[in-house]
Image (cartoon, rainbow, N blue to C red; front, side, top):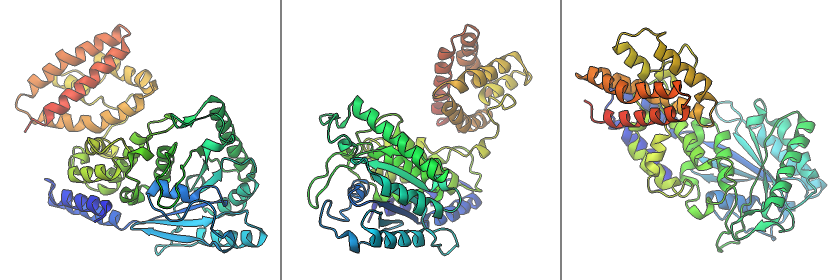
Length: 453
């Protein structure tokens, strides 16, 4: 049985065994069954020699073709590969001669305009791969500007991803650090300039903004070991991010399990964490749509988190602990949390504590904390994410506290051990210490919440 089947089976089991009202359980099951039927159609195209086969082999661990010479470009057509609910459409690009190019262009246009049974465009995302080892990208620009983008329908920017492969040989192999498998500064600068140039040429030709990335898929002859890719996690992150949320789970079972494939990246972003968050959003927003279960939906999908952990452990750094990470990145939808981040929104735990001691909503303490949130924390690098997570967890904590017979003691402890100290830190301009203590308070309350009845 494939991993996705185990993952989906685990989701179904988690829903059936969840300790929630039957009406909400039925809503979750209905949403789950809809998710289970979703198919993602990904078109991958590029000129001969750009490394499409190497990329597919690296991403999905499938030897769809022998990489290198031997294929006859004159006879190549769009090839379909079915990986359960993930459908890959491998299409040749341009550059194989006028007659072949005309045939390829017509096939691509026809496929891009094809509709599914519901009347929606069949292709969800087009991944266009460019050859980073060549300066002549004329045929690639013709493919993108004249064939693909004009036939993407609405929301063009989110239906095309441009990726420059073979970054390791972009300067004929010079300035590539083979030991650490990454570009040295001169090559990095060259690649960044190439990205900027591609972005500019596409914008000039179509008016559409794209943000190309560069990577190296490595090289794999049939039956031989795969060379280590570079920026493959980045490529996968953007593929998943550009995929409609309700279809992202189709990737789970097909991602290459080898951790070696995902370890080398530019580290401009934590792509592994980003991948977890994208999967988490799908489970949270699509699985729980219309179901008011209260608390964090991550607490329901425990077995599913473990199954997904086994599936994508290689991508996110090893299967150990991945299940917990997946669950941690399943946020509750803001609609069920209430409030917002503006000055009129509540501070939840702080507000509840002040209310316990009969302080008004515009009291000194709440005014200071809201000012801290809006005018300092919001502007920090991780600030918006911290605020988002706080709004996702605080309401459930407050609800649990209010159900406890010793609620007054709990709020008094929060006031004495955390909030009063945080207030002093803010008054003394020690905002970092306030943030650290507030995070410690949330961690403490989350642990305590598990003990409360």
